[in-house]
Image (cartoon, rainbow, N blue to C red; front, side, top):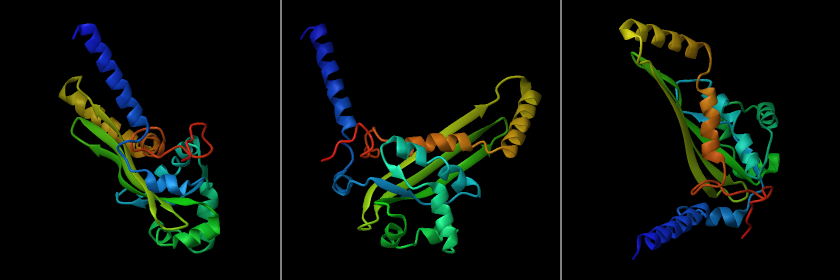
Length: 217
């Protein structure tokens, strides 16, 4: 086989592999395709981190990728106020509410149950690592069945490798103070949410009915 024919064959195989990935060949979407949810209720995330701001930091940025993927999302403010008026303000208690009851109250087809696994900065002698990691599952509020599950993370690493030892220590101290005065993980929470909830990749959530890329089956 000539080199040109071999390159052409490899190109075709790569194209086929890419198409298979777009179709979600590595994930079983049968439950999600059967349910066809059009509206999603995003519940306040559970928090497995020591950062009390972690659930709010993630929740504030979860609706955008879902809406962009073609789903109607119950407004976060409406969700929070409704639970508050019913005496529920802790995510752990909210996650225990019966799915059928959630559908009755909000009228949504499905709900996202999310857990923040990592959130915030970890400091080293001459640098830091800021990381956000979360996992989620989409549950059909009509049946209580899990339709899809996924995860997402974003990491920013800072290494101060110039200016000598004193310069390294000073830079690390300034960076730590800056991170403590602001939520350094908040921008990463947006990126982690996008990677966790945006449709279009192998294993990701499928496009919803409001998307031009929606493929009902």
